[in-house]
Image 1 (cartoon, rainbow, N blue to C red):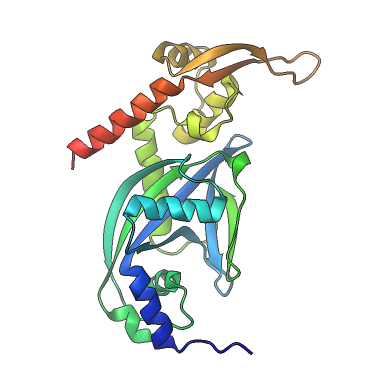
Image 2 (cartoon, rainbow, N blue to C red):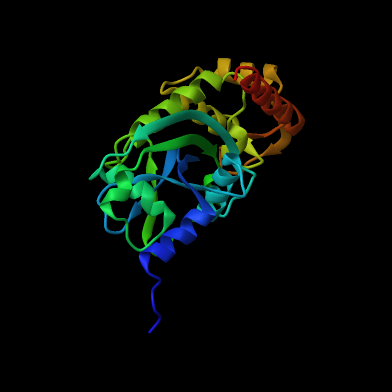
Length: 261
């Protein structure tokens, strides 16, 4: 029978690897069947769900941590769209279940109660946009991972519902500047598929003709000389993103964010 390391030894190894009390929360979003999906995780012994996340390793930056978590949970590496949108710190109170779940991200056997009352948690929040159909969910043996419709979320730990709402609010502010569909759609897509993403993000219907005219005039997408065979009478035209313009828009957004820091 394998001997388990004493708590102090296990905790010391975790602290040597990770920066204690500084974590990233990752709002991983996909798009399927006209709905924005959020990937949530849950410890098997808990009834509440959490955003995916974890502590920052001592040999990596916060963005690297977010990408590492994305890859470990979905199999998708740095191809996803990532943006840090919020920072907060919170007093650790003994008996606070959310703080206890945060500490368990260190993956040690046991967390003594006095560890939860040593100071503050610092959390950096990211939203990450991924192609739903490319995700291969990989849960650890102690957890569950599941996609949820953004309009039908389960019971979440305290701040995590707030973070999701803030992420959606930030995306809405950027929706006219960054072509978010690039990260959520396959390489070839129809105009109704693109429009449905914007409608899901904005929470309202958009005029079909105006939307198509605006998307084409901005120059982020271009029509292909192809149609999708969907039946005897339906053959919608296919489009693709102009990757060079998308990358330029993404770089400009990063520069604007840096100038505001």
